[in-house]
Image (cartoon, rainbow, N blue to C red; front, side):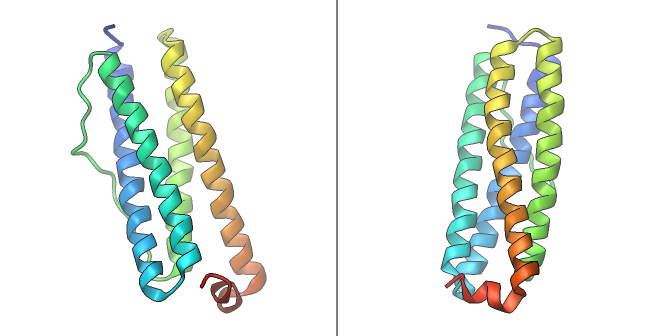
Length: 154
């Protein structure tokens, strides 16, 4: 089924965001692992794997719409040198992602591609959850102090 070209371009932009997230989360996970914070590392890795599944869904949808998935584009990857900066960078990434999915959902509705819209809504729900999890980490760091928070992440 030939899809709308503007929507396919938007799906490729979303794909670039997902691929960026995968890389950023994995680097943060490996840094945390190296520092001995295995719980936080697992948290980041789980999020990266979810982003991989999102990338897979986007690639499948682009192919279904007879487009070409572009996997060579990445947005800026922002690696934090310390955990609070990592969490902040990931939060900013998710804020942009939620905005982008909301805009893409509107576009899919405008071009009457409700199946694509449904796929995007499913992914958006995961992204909202990621945002909530990151805000929870930020709250814990603030409320517990960084040192106490980190002592719970071994």
